[in-house]
Amino acid sequence: MKNLIGLILFLLAVAFLFRVDFIFYIIYVCIGLYVWSRWGIPYRLEKLKVKRLFQDHAFWGDKLEIKLRVENGSFLRIPWLEIYDSVAVQLSATRPINTVIPLPAKETAEFDYEVSTHRRGYYRIGPTRFRTGDLFGLYEEHAVELPAQYLTIYPRITPIERIQISSRLPFGTIISKQQLFEDPARPTGVRDFRSGDSMRQINWKVSAHTQNLMVKTLQPAIYLETMIVLNLFGGDFASWDKHANIEWGIELAASLAAHLHGKRQPVGLASNGTDPLQTDSTHPPEFDPTSGRLINQADSAQTLYSLPPNNGRAHLMKLLERLARIETAEVANFNDWLRTTTLPIGWGGTALVITPQADDQLCQTLHHWVRRGINPILIHTEKSNRFYAVKDRARQLGFVAVEVSAPADLEVAFN
Image 1 (cartoon, rainbow, N blue to C red):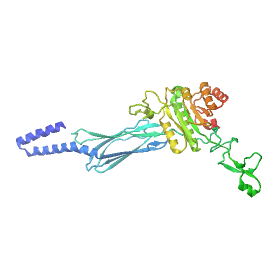
Image 2: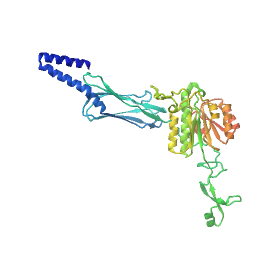
Image 3: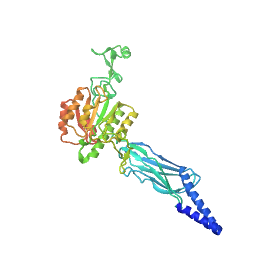
Image 4: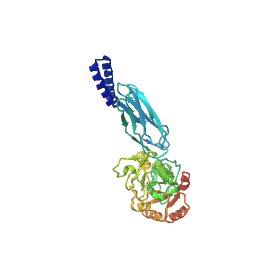
């Protein structure tokens, strides 16, 4: 552009010196190009309207399409517009946007591509960069940027048809084979009065009709106030397939939470893992350029804040969102953490303890929970020859231990 200004000044001096009208015409053209390049391009970029449209939360395996809408809101044509959308390599299912187009005045261009949802996590979509300039290259190119947006992909949920989880609470909404407690909210019929039956159970209307005392029969049921306790201490996972084992533990936690929610039971979450969005790091979040996943920048891992048991779809979505972002930690040893943590469940509640490995110390810790009235169920997620010893030890200490190293083990282990 400096060369163009110098050329205009030179031609202006020559035109005044020799009085050549054609040189004045060239000067007018150069001045027009200068004005066009100096103010026209920024004006068109200022009027450029861009929008990225997509669902910012997705379930594992969903088809997710990202649309980019670019509108030229000015009355001037954009001769060329370069569009580059930044998407992590492992997240992209189809080719992301990287193109150059002309954009007439008051026209709109739309682009779309798909992203893979086969990896749980918290991802960055974008930023998208737009660059343009004049056709002659006289003035420096201008660029604007559409800020990044964020996508949460929930963990994979394995459907669970039926599992048997015991409870110490007398009433609830899940049918139980235990006849010790009956739920007054679930009548199943009537029978003849027997010695020892409570007067409150007499069905007076049916008794008057039959001229014989009849009592209501009730369906036995249990109520599961459940905490899912997830071990994400990195040192407890086998190094030969660490990533797959970590993801399976998180998938198992999500599947159990979804199953209990489907049974209208309150479920909570506690873990010694870390949520990168809840750390005290003062730095802005950073994302791995290849995987697209959020990078944990905390100087020391911080345990995930526990979610107390609750029911309802909103609570389930909050729990799954935590499981989507959670990562392993290296400072909170699982057994030590269990001894110091306080689960937000009362007497009779159930704790589903998901861990890749277990030993006698962990069994002793869970035995203390049994003595406090909590019903722990130890879920071992890695294949191990030592599990049978752990299972026997758990039985001696008053709780159940099962091995669930794959989805096929789910219903076999709990039934």
